Every structure is written in structure tokens, then in C-alpha cells.
Figure: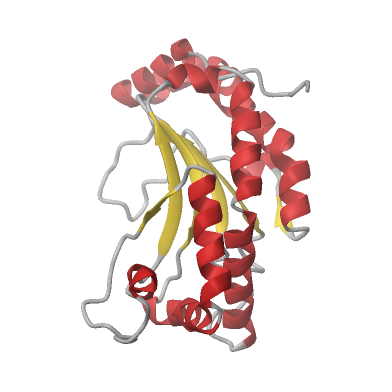
Length: 236
């Protein structure tokens, strides 16, 4: 299949790193077009190439190639770090964040020496994530099938923060890591950077995202419950 995305070269990644190292408006302006064509445009092309599958997974996905891709220039207002330029870039594949705040999302990211993609769900308040736990207890077989789908997609389970006290002490052992999680995701990471210098990465991600679909469907249903219960509200 022909794709818009043709790859992100090692030279483009090196330039991105140099731009961050210099942290200079002058350097950035001198190389702005190179950075756009070598980094930003390919990432926007990736969004276009994945859009058909992602719309099939969720027809409410908001896949504006411009808005989905992170910016090279950082907004440092209110941030401890005043470095103005990134050396890592990412894409969030998700619903429109103002209408569906904190919705589960697929993502792609790369750093100077690695890349990754996967599926994650974070909420601003840990208490809201209890809805996910409740659904897991209500539908354990469905959830564990979704966990297996993520494993089949090559994803590993990760959690940023756990509860210390069990809310469901009598839950089956295989469910407990998820029931203690305040948020979680399923991630794939690799260090073969040549992979993102080829459109083959599109096929790789399409397959993984599609296989992991049952988990996305589970999590987006949980998010829908949060919204219907008023735990998460659209931004005005």
C-alpha cells in the first residue's frame, strides 16, 4: 500500500537534537523549514495514514493532523524547565479533548534513541478511575480478553501510580494489578530507529492498534460512564 509517510531520517532527528541543544530562536529560525519537512510533516502524514483505521475503531476520533502532532517549540510558561525546544515528539490519536476531556487515546512517540506507541487512559482525579475498576469487576472475562489482545499486539502493561490499599481484596489474582492502578496503559517501545525511517512503521502500528481494539472499546465505555455520571465534564 502507498502511504503519505515515507519516514523520519536519522539526520532529521539529529537536527532536532541540535535544535534543542542550541535552544536558540536564531538557530530554530535558520532550520525551521528543515525541521518542518523532516519531523513535523512526516508525523502529520502518519496521522493521515492511520486515520481510516482509527475512524473505524472510533468514529468520534478527532484526527486533525495539525492538532494531533506535538510542537517542536515548547510553551514554557508555568514550567520549571525553560528549555524552549523539544527533542522528543509525539502524536495523540483521540477524541476532541474539549468535548471529551481525559478520553483514552492511542499514541506514537519518539526520542533521540527510541520510539514507541500504544494505548493509555489517564484521568486528572484518581478517584474517577474507580469507574474502570468497577467495570473490571463487572466484566472480568471481557477485560482479561482485552488484556490478552494488548499482549498479542506486543504491548506491555504499565502504571504510573498504584493504590497502597486494596479495594477489592477478594478479586482474582490476575485482576489485582489493574484494580490497584490509578491509571494505566499498554505500551510498546523499541530502539531500532531505522524502523521509523520507513513506511513499514505504518503497517506495524495499524496491526497493533487494531489487535488492541478490545481494550480501547472497554476504556472508552468506562470514559462514557464517567461523563454520564458527571465525573468528567466537557470544557466550556
